[in-house]
Image (cartoon, rainbow, N blue to C red; front, top):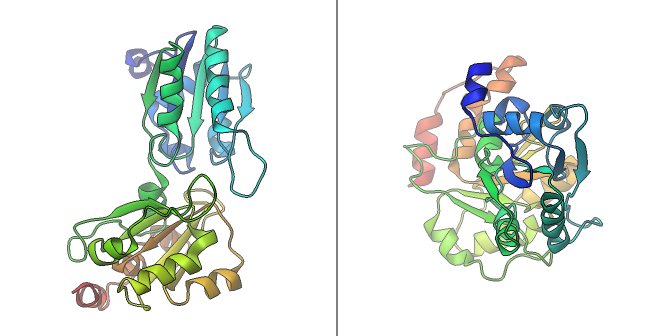
Length: 279
């Protein structure tokens, strides 16, 4: 392993790595991020980076919280970006660590542009986004050959906290068989209504995967028409990934974590049901 790490790039003083930590399980960290955690002088991290991942930093590294959570006090994005510049200009080796992937609803592009503006060298280190890795940990494939050949990723709210008004719900309802939504739980009632109005079946499967790929992971399976009521009744809370589509049905065959806990997986009627529903 030491030989492998020796071949990887080093996090140099005065530079910033904009990196993704994946959805939570430290086993999903890239080798580059693991190496950076051992070299960084300071790790500026989001709220969604798990404690298990942060526990891999070197003993004398500084952890600096820069999380942004809806409805809670948080740093302004411009201030976070300028803080990265300040630390790099001081000669620090800076790891900007984000949950998932920095370029998937992670504002990594904004931070990269600020670094360019101030002449700070940086590297982009991709991570496994929760919209793929988190769903896989719940036993839900984002694509399945018998069901869908396309998937759409979207955010459930914009910078002001409301549903983005530029989303064409009618086009999504008719054109994308699977929708994977980030930060959508708060507005699930309106989102469900928009999709049903666009032609989606009220009985279409929906799943909420909360705290994906962590020890606190929970999964709620419901339908578009029942989503609001079931979320309220369950008491689940963000962070969550929401997936709409027939691929949710495959969880009864692919819930590998459930199987480890004793759940019996089954294929009974699964393909025929999913294919029929997708037609």
